[in-house]
Structure formats: structure tokens, C-alpha cells
Image 1 (cartoon, rainbow, N blue to C red):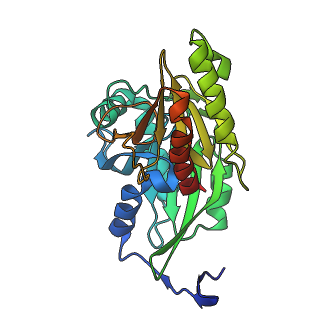
Image 2 (image 1 turned 180 degrees about the vertical axis):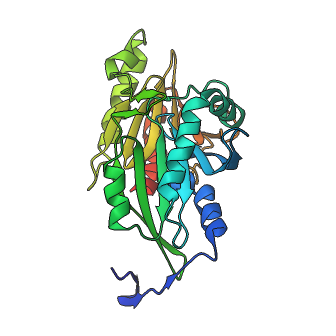
Image 3 (image 1 turned 30 degrees about the vertical axis):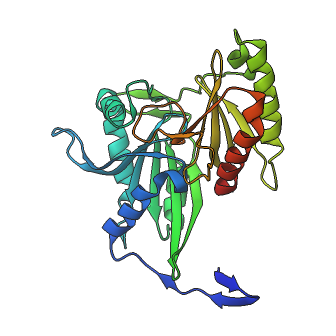
Length: 296
């Protein structure tokens, strides 16, 4: 499909360009992992144990705190699926190593969810055999295709995915654990009436932002995530206020945002807002709206 750049009612078809090599592609994805996939970057070229042998291209942690392995396909590198499975097997046997990596990078209060690890395979193209292969597998594998164009245009799309229910081998059995169900009521328990009313008003205003894409509300163990494709805000109800995490690059002339990119925190966003009263509500919703517009 042709991609056009429009300006002053004129359309210019963009020519395709490629990264110089796999390393350049990898560096670009790692630098923009959170923007592209909603995944927090953990490590590049991560060396596995001597017994296992190998180096994982990229490691990350998604918004559900599930481990993510990313491998890149360059040219006719047809063994990318096998590589992903090879490193997934290492992850299952070395949860402690991964947990230590997360604690070192994101903070000690992050609890990794090992129930549904993911493997993302990134390439310009995949064959029909690749797509068929992952549909016959029992692991969470996703094929992501990309195109790079002149004028700094980058296109990314999900080609195929397989959602795991059970994976077995002769030596071990791995059963997918569904994320524990939480509700809004769980988060409202033991909260003051002021916080309950403030959250109700915030929630209503967040849903009012909805345009073409439906806003999803996902209560997690420690916070409530709001997303359109990827999270644009996470809200944690506390005794006397709320912590809200949003995307980066938000225009905040009142200085309510705190940069927590180098501090352990629960939400996936690195910009933290503290909401204490109704007087701050409209301004805070304006900050959340900026994060929402970045995600659509």
C-alpha cells in the first residue's frame, strides 16, 4: 500500500527506505519501545546462562508486567521463530534472573507476571509459512511487520499472533495463568467518600475523551489502566489522593507532573501526577487528554 505525505492539498508518495542493518533497526525499536508497543525497555543483547548459550536481542516488560522477548529478522533469517522459542524456554527456567533485571531497571516493587510471557518477532515481511507456524504453536508469539519511508515516516502493524493456552514439552508443562480478575469496586474498598467521588468524576471525564476508538478500562492489582491500543493513563487510588501516570512530553505549565522514569513506580507511564481535589480535576484531565491523543 502506497504511503503519501500531504501538505497544502498536495500529495507526495513516499519512497521506501530501510535501516542500514539489523543493529540500526534494533536500536530504533529499543529507543521507542514504549511508544511503539507500550513495553518498558529492560536490556539489549542480554546474555543468557552459559549452559543455555545465546543473547536475546531485546527484553522488556509490558503493561501487565509480563516479560517480553523481542527478536529481529533481517534478510532471509528464517530461524527467527525458533530463536524466539529458544529464549522463551530460557526465560521459563530463569525467572529469578529476569526478576532481578526488572528490579534493577524499574524498582524493587515491580511484581513480574510470569503467567503469559510474550515473544515479539519484528521484520519487514513474513512468509505465509511463518504465519501458519505460529498458529500451530502454544505460546504467545506475535509477528510485527514494519516499513520505513523517507521524511522519517515509520509504519508498524501486527501481521499475526497466537495466544497461548497451554505449552507442553517432554520435560515440563507450562500452563497459561489468566490474569487475576480485579474490579473497580476492589479499588474503591476502604477509600474515603471524597476519593470515591473524585474518582467517579475523573472516570466520567476520561470516558468523555473517547473518539473513534473505544477507551478500555482495565482494573489491575495496583492500579486501573485506561487504554486505546496501549495505555494512556493509569490511576492508583490512595487514602487521601490519586496517583496518575501518563505519557511523556506533556505540556504542564502548572508543574504538576513529576518525572519518575528513573524511579520504581506502578504505572507504565513515566510522568506522575498527584490528584488531590476537585479544584485540580479539569487541569489534570487536560494532561490526561494530551496522553490520550498521543496514543491514538
